[in-house]
Amino acid sequence: MEPYILPDVDVIAGVDEVGRGPLVGAVVTAAVILDPNKPIAGLMDSKKLSEKKRVTLAGQIKENALAWCIGRCEAWEIDQLNILQATMVAMQRAVQGLSVQPQLVLVDGNRCPDLPMASESVVKGDARVAAISAASIIAKVARDQEMHELHEQYPHYGFANHKGYPTKAHLQIIEEYGVLDNYRKSFKPVAQIIARNSAE
Image 1 (cartoon, rainbow, N blue to C red):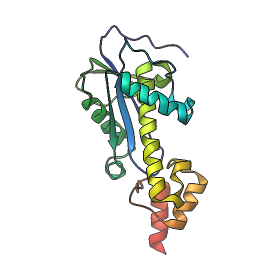
Image 2: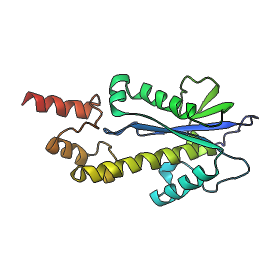
Image 3: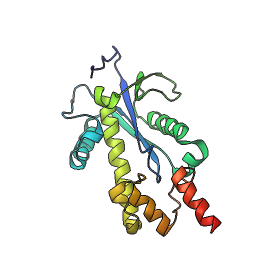
Image 4: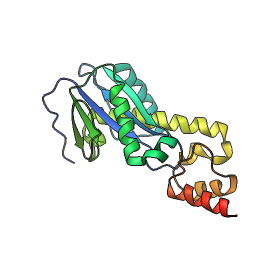
């Protein structure tokens, strides 16, 4: 994969999201402005790292970055907006929450949210741009932590294992125990279960 050549701009924020596919919980985004004087070794796409390594790197990013912020859109907002629009809103919230104003925002993927500063989408940016890698790592750690907390509340749902994704086992669990408030009720597998239950 070709490396991304960073523009000649002093303050660049990287933005990424985690959790567009799960049936439960928020879509979580992060914005990170790395400090060029404090490089962090080992930054890469969060999906290619072990959970232990992600947690370690997330701590280093929060400690050494010039600024970072988590943005989110809750399940009920996703149901109102749709997942794409909710992701854009969560990204806007992450950028707005930065304590340092970036001159340029680089967003993983093929589209950018509407922002008050210059922005650019970077396909496979989480593997090509360090600041986007950093954003993907802290967003993933934050969302996984929420799934562990939900698991403690509702251990029989298995959130620590499937992280809310629509696995066969997860769908069987929802059929058996029902749809919690944390679920995205507009998502097809959840909507189908709700419709079946209400028809009985």
